[in-house]
Image (cartoon, rainbow, N blue to C red; front, side, top):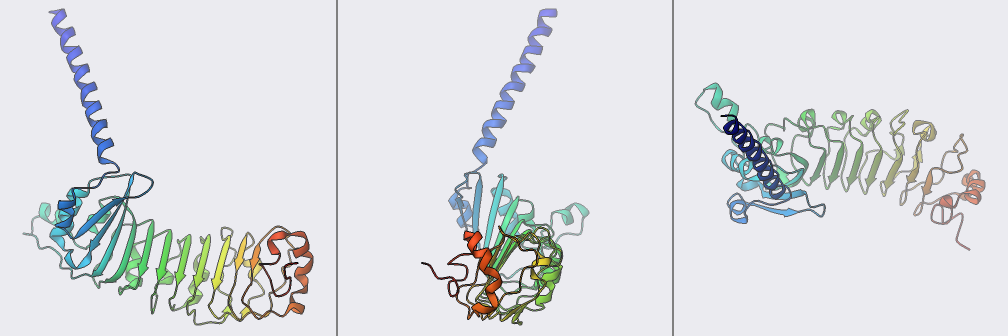
Length: 315
Protein backbone atom coordinates (compact mmCIF):
# COMPACT_ATOMS: atom_id res chain seq x y z
CA UNK A 1 0.00 0.00 0.00
CA UNK A 2 2.72 2.42 1.01
CA UNK A 3 4.79 1.50 -2.07
CA UNK A 4 1.79 2.26 -4.31
CA UNK A 5 1.40 5.68 -2.73
CA UNK A 6 5.09 6.44 -3.30
CA UNK A 7 4.77 5.43 -6.94
CA UNK A 8 1.75 7.70 -7.35
CA UNK A 9 3.65 10.64 -5.80
CA UNK A 10 6.57 10.07 -8.14
CA UNK A 11 4.26 9.88 -11.15
CA UNK A 12 2.68 13.20 -10.19
CA UNK A 13 6.09 14.84 -9.71
CA UNK A 14 7.45 13.54 -13.00
CA UNK A 15 4.28 14.59 -14.82
CA UNK A 16 4.61 18.10 -13.42
CA UNK A 17 8.25 18.27 -14.57
CA UNK A 18 7.36 17.08 -18.08
CA UNK A 19 4.48 19.56 -18.34
CA UNK A 20 6.75 22.38 -17.20
CA UNK A 21 9.36 21.47 -19.81
CA UNK A 22 6.71 21.25 -22.52
CA UNK A 23 5.33 24.65 -21.55
CA UNK A 24 8.81 26.16 -21.55
CA UNK A 25 9.56 24.65 -24.94
CA UNK A 26 6.26 25.93 -26.31
CA UNK A 27 6.87 29.46 -25.06
CA UNK A 28 10.38 29.56 -26.49
CA UNK A 29 8.99 28.51 -29.81
CA UNK A 30 6.19 31.09 -29.75
CA UNK A 31 8.20 34.09 -28.61
CA UNK A 32 9.98 35.71 -31.52
CA UNK A 33 8.29 33.68 -34.27
CA UNK A 34 5.78 34.78 -36.90
CA UNK A 35 2.47 33.07 -37.71
CA UNK A 36 2.29 31.05 -40.91
CA UNK A 37 2.61 33.30 -44.01
CA UNK A 38 -0.49 31.67 -45.53
CA UNK A 39 -2.59 32.68 -42.54
CA UNK A 40 -1.25 36.22 -42.62
CA UNK A 41 -1.78 36.65 -46.37
CA UNK A 42 -5.42 35.73 -45.89
CA UNK A 43 -5.69 38.78 -43.64
CA UNK A 44 -3.72 41.10 -45.90
CA UNK A 45 -0.78 41.11 -43.47
CA UNK A 46 2.91 40.28 -43.33
CA UNK A 47 5.28 39.67 -40.43
CA UNK A 48 8.99 39.99 -39.80
CA UNK A 49 11.25 39.58 -36.79
CA UNK A 50 13.01 42.71 -35.63
CA UNK A 51 16.76 42.56 -34.87
CA UNK A 52 16.24 42.05 -31.14
CA UNK A 53 14.72 38.67 -31.93
CA UNK A 54 11.76 38.71 -29.57
CA UNK A 55 9.83 41.55 -31.22
CA UNK A 56 7.64 40.98 -34.24
CA UNK A 57 6.64 43.60 -36.77
CA UNK A 58 3.26 43.25 -38.49
CA UNK A 59 2.20 45.27 -41.54
CA UNK A 60 -1.45 45.06 -42.59
CA UNK A 61 -3.50 46.49 -45.45
CA UNK A 62 -6.15 48.65 -43.80
CA UNK A 63 -8.53 48.18 -46.74
CA UNK A 64 -8.82 44.49 -45.81
CA UNK A 65 -9.18 45.04 -42.07
CA UNK A 66 -12.61 44.43 -40.57
CA UNK A 67 -14.10 42.90 -37.42
CA UNK A 68 -13.63 39.36 -38.72
CA UNK A 69 -10.04 40.02 -39.86
CA UNK A 70 -9.19 41.64 -36.53
CA UNK A 71 -10.64 38.72 -34.58
CA UNK A 72 -8.64 36.19 -36.62
CA UNK A 73 -5.49 38.29 -36.25
CA UNK A 74 -5.88 38.27 -32.46
CA UNK A 75 -6.01 34.47 -32.54
CA UNK A 76 -3.03 33.78 -34.82
CA UNK A 77 -0.81 36.60 -33.55
CA UNK A 78 -0.49 35.02 -30.13
CA UNK A 79 1.83 36.61 -27.60
CA UNK A 80 5.39 37.87 -27.80
CA UNK A 81 7.42 40.09 -25.52
CA UNK A 82 6.67 43.01 -27.84
CA UNK A 83 4.86 43.55 -31.12
CA UNK A 84 4.91 46.51 -33.47
CA UNK A 85 2.07 47.03 -35.91
CA UNK A 86 1.61 49.12 -39.04
CA UNK A 87 -1.62 49.99 -40.85
CA UNK A 88 -1.37 51.12 -44.47
CA UNK A 89 -4.19 52.65 -46.49
CA UNK A 90 -7.82 53.66 -46.13
CA UNK A 91 -9.83 51.80 -43.54
CA UNK A 92 -13.53 51.01 -44.05
CA UNK A 93 -14.60 49.89 -40.61
CA UNK A 94 -17.95 48.59 -39.39
CA UNK A 95 -18.40 47.38 -35.84
CA UNK A 96 -19.44 43.73 -35.61
CA UNK A 97 -23.04 43.09 -34.58
CA UNK A 98 -23.92 40.80 -31.68
CA UNK A 99 -27.08 38.88 -30.79
CA UNK A 100 -27.51 41.02 -27.68
CA UNK A 101 -26.28 38.56 -25.05
CA UNK A 102 -23.80 39.88 -22.50
CA UNK A 103 -21.35 37.09 -23.32
CA UNK A 104 -21.49 37.95 -27.02
CA UNK A 105 -21.13 41.68 -26.37
CA UNK A 106 -17.88 41.06 -24.50
CA UNK A 107 -16.45 39.47 -27.62
CA UNK A 108 -17.52 42.20 -30.04
CA UNK A 109 -14.57 44.05 -31.57
CA UNK A 110 -15.70 47.67 -31.41
CA UNK A 111 -12.74 49.34 -33.14
CA UNK A 112 -9.92 48.32 -35.50
CA UNK A 113 -7.51 48.66 -32.57
CA UNK A 114 -9.27 46.24 -30.19
CA UNK A 115 -7.31 43.21 -31.40
CA UNK A 116 -4.05 45.16 -31.11
CA UNK A 117 -4.76 46.09 -27.51
CA UNK A 118 -4.98 42.37 -26.71
CA UNK A 119 -1.88 41.38 -28.69
CA UNK A 120 0.76 43.28 -26.68
CA UNK A 121 1.35 45.82 -29.45
CA UNK A 122 3.81 48.39 -28.10
CA UNK A 123 4.41 50.38 -31.27
CA UNK A 124 1.70 51.46 -33.73
CA UNK A 125 2.40 53.15 -37.08
CA UNK A 126 -0.32 54.53 -39.36
CA UNK A 127 0.77 55.25 -42.95
CA UNK A 128 -1.52 56.94 -45.54
CA UNK A 129 -4.25 55.91 -43.13
CA UNK A 130 -7.84 57.22 -43.18
CA UNK A 131 -10.21 56.52 -40.31
CA UNK A 132 -13.07 58.39 -38.65
CA UNK A 133 -14.33 55.93 -36.06
CA UNK A 134 -13.81 54.99 -32.45
CA UNK A 135 -10.31 55.57 -31.00
CA UNK A 136 -8.22 52.84 -29.32
CA UNK A 137 -9.03 51.96 -25.73
CA UNK A 138 -5.48 51.20 -24.68
CA UNK A 139 -2.11 52.91 -24.62
CA UNK A 140 0.64 52.35 -27.17
CA UNK A 141 4.13 53.22 -25.96
CA UNK A 142 5.06 54.52 -29.40
CA UNK A 143 2.87 56.08 -32.10
CA UNK A 144 3.85 57.22 -35.59
CA UNK A 145 1.62 59.04 -38.07
CA UNK A 146 2.64 59.53 -41.69
CA UNK A 147 0.15 61.34 -43.93
CA UNK A 148 -2.99 60.20 -42.11
CA UNK A 149 -6.53 61.49 -41.83
CA UNK A 150 -7.93 60.91 -38.35
CA UNK A 151 -9.51 62.89 -35.53
CA UNK A 152 -6.31 63.57 -33.57
CA UNK A 153 -7.89 65.11 -30.43
CA UNK A 154 -10.25 62.14 -30.04
CA UNK A 155 -7.47 59.67 -30.78
CA UNK A 156 -5.20 61.19 -28.13
CA UNK A 157 -7.99 61.32 -25.56
CA UNK A 158 -7.50 57.56 -25.05
CA UNK A 159 -4.10 56.72 -26.58
CA UNK A 160 -1.37 58.16 -24.33
CA UNK A 161 2.00 57.48 -26.01
CA UNK A 162 5.34 58.30 -24.44
CA UNK A 163 6.95 58.49 -27.92
CA UNK A 164 5.28 60.22 -30.86
CA UNK A 165 6.50 60.80 -34.40
CA UNK A 166 4.50 62.91 -36.87
CA UNK A 167 5.38 63.12 -40.57
CA UNK A 168 3.77 64.83 -43.54
CA UNK A 169 0.68 66.12 -41.74
CA UNK A 170 -1.07 69.14 -43.27
CA UNK A 171 -2.87 70.09 -40.07
CA UNK A 172 -1.73 68.35 -36.91
CA UNK A 173 -4.00 69.03 -33.93
CA UNK A 174 -4.56 67.56 -30.50
CA UNK A 175 -1.39 68.82 -28.80
CA UNK A 176 -3.44 69.72 -25.74
CA UNK A 177 -3.97 65.99 -25.06
CA UNK A 178 -0.28 65.05 -25.20
CA UNK A 179 0.94 66.26 -21.82
CA UNK A 180 2.54 62.89 -21.01
CA UNK A 181 4.69 62.60 -24.15
CA UNK A 182 8.43 62.28 -23.45
CA UNK A 183 9.82 62.06 -26.99
CA UNK A 184 8.12 64.16 -29.70
CA UNK A 185 9.45 64.37 -33.27
CA UNK A 186 7.65 66.27 -36.05
CA UNK A 187 8.75 66.53 -39.70
CA UNK A 188 7.29 68.32 -42.72
CA UNK A 189 4.01 69.17 -41.02
CA UNK A 190 1.88 72.16 -40.08
CA UNK A 191 0.69 72.55 -36.51
CA UNK A 192 -2.26 74.14 -34.82
CA UNK A 193 -2.03 75.80 -31.38
CA UNK A 194 1.75 75.51 -31.04
CA UNK A 195 1.53 77.10 -27.58
CA UNK A 196 0.33 73.76 -26.23
CA UNK A 197 3.94 72.59 -26.30
CA UNK A 198 4.23 74.50 -23.03
CA UNK A 199 1.94 71.93 -21.37
CA UNK A 200 4.33 69.05 -22.10
CA UNK A 201 6.36 69.20 -18.91
CA UNK A 202 7.47 65.55 -19.23
CA UNK A 203 9.25 66.16 -22.54
CA UNK A 204 12.83 64.90 -22.82
CA UNK A 205 13.20 65.38 -26.57
CA UNK A 206 11.50 67.98 -28.78
CA UNK A 207 12.58 67.70 -32.42
CA UNK A 208 10.78 69.64 -35.15
CA UNK A 209 12.08 69.97 -38.71
CA UNK A 210 10.84 71.60 -41.93
CA UNK A 211 7.47 72.38 -40.38
CA UNK A 212 5.07 75.33 -40.17
CA UNK A 213 4.77 76.28 -36.51
CA UNK A 214 2.59 79.34 -37.27
CA UNK A 215 5.10 81.42 -35.32
CA UNK A 216 8.60 82.78 -35.95
CA UNK A 217 9.46 83.05 -32.28
CA UNK A 218 10.82 80.25 -30.15
CA UNK A 219 8.82 80.87 -26.99
CA UNK A 220 6.95 77.60 -26.55
CA UNK A 221 9.46 75.58 -24.51
CA UNK A 222 7.72 73.97 -21.49
CA UNK A 223 8.31 76.07 -18.39
CA UNK A 224 10.32 74.60 -15.53
CA UNK A 225 10.96 71.42 -17.48
CA UNK A 226 13.56 69.46 -15.51
CA UNK A 227 13.58 66.55 -17.96
CA UNK A 228 14.01 68.37 -21.30
CA UNK A 229 17.56 67.75 -22.52
CA UNK A 230 17.33 68.06 -26.33
CA UNK A 231 15.62 70.78 -28.39
CA UNK A 232 15.96 70.61 -32.17
CA UNK A 233 14.01 73.17 -34.22
CA UNK A 234 15.47 73.06 -37.74
CA UNK A 235 14.33 74.75 -40.93
CA UNK A 236 11.20 76.23 -39.33
CA UNK A 237 11.76 79.96 -40.16
CA UNK A 238 12.42 80.88 -36.54
CA UNK A 239 13.62 84.51 -36.26
CA UNK A 240 13.80 85.22 -32.54
CA UNK A 241 14.19 83.36 -29.26
CA UNK A 242 12.53 84.08 -25.95
CA UNK A 243 14.88 85.44 -23.27
CA UNK A 244 13.67 82.82 -20.79
CA UNK A 245 14.85 79.91 -22.95
CA UNK A 246 17.61 78.91 -20.53
CA UNK A 247 15.53 79.19 -17.36
CA UNK A 248 12.63 77.29 -18.92
CA UNK A 249 14.88 74.27 -19.52
CA UNK A 250 17.63 74.36 -16.86
CA UNK A 251 18.92 70.88 -17.77
CA UNK A 252 19.08 71.43 -21.52
CA UNK A 253 22.09 69.60 -23.01
CA UNK A 254 21.65 70.05 -26.77
CA UNK A 255 20.18 73.02 -28.65
CA UNK A 256 19.99 72.67 -32.44
CA UNK A 257 18.45 75.63 -34.30
CA UNK A 258 20.10 75.13 -37.68
CA UNK A 259 18.75 76.56 -40.93
CA UNK A 260 16.43 79.19 -39.48
CA UNK A 261 16.52 83.01 -39.70
CA UNK A 262 18.17 83.73 -36.34
CA UNK A 263 20.55 86.68 -35.90
CA UNK A 264 21.31 86.37 -32.19
CA UNK A 265 20.84 84.20 -29.14
CA UNK A 266 19.76 85.44 -25.69
CA UNK A 267 22.60 85.34 -23.19
CA UNK A 268 22.55 82.48 -20.72
CA UNK A 269 22.65 84.07 -17.26
CA UNK A 270 23.82 80.83 -15.68
CA UNK A 271 27.12 80.91 -17.60
CA UNK A 272 27.26 77.14 -17.87
CA UNK A 273 30.54 75.87 -19.30
CA UNK A 274 29.63 72.31 -20.14
CA UNK A 275 26.12 72.51 -21.54
CA UNK A 276 24.22 72.85 -23.69
CA UNK A 277 26.00 71.99 -26.91
CA UNK A 278 24.89 74.42 -29.59
CA UNK A 279 24.32 74.20 -33.34
CA UNK A 280 23.34 77.35 -35.26
CA UNK A 281 24.67 76.66 -38.76
CA UNK A 282 22.62 78.05 -41.63
CA UNK A 283 21.44 81.19 -39.78
CA UNK A 284 22.22 84.86 -40.69
CA UNK A 285 24.01 85.40 -37.36
CA UNK A 286 25.19 88.78 -36.11
CA UNK A 287 28.51 87.83 -34.53
CA UNK A 288 28.73 91.03 -32.49
CA UNK A 289 25.51 90.10 -30.69
CA UNK A 290 27.02 86.70 -29.91
CA UNK A 291 30.18 88.06 -28.34
CA UNK A 292 29.05 86.69 -24.96
CA UNK A 293 29.66 83.18 -26.29
CA UNK A 294 33.36 83.78 -27.00
CA UNK A 295 34.71 82.71 -23.63
CA UNK A 296 32.48 79.69 -23.62
CA UNK A 297 33.63 78.62 -27.06
CA UNK A 298 37.26 78.77 -25.93
CA UNK A 299 36.58 76.62 -22.86
CA UNK A 300 34.10 74.18 -24.33
CA UNK A 301 34.80 72.33 -27.61
CA UNK A 302 31.09 71.57 -28.09
CA UNK A 303 30.53 75.27 -28.77
CA UNK A 304 33.24 75.53 -31.42
CA UNK A 305 33.25 75.55 -35.24
CA UNK A 306 30.12 73.54 -36.07
CA UNK A 307 28.18 75.42 -33.39
CA UNK A 308 28.56 78.92 -34.82
CA UNK A 309 30.71 78.47 -37.96
CA UNK A 310 30.15 82.03 -39.22
CA UNK A 311 31.56 83.59 -36.05
CA UNK A 312 34.13 80.95 -35.09
CA UNK A 313 35.48 79.41 -38.31
CA UNK A 314 37.77 76.43 -38.20
CA UNK A 315 41.50 77.26 -38.20
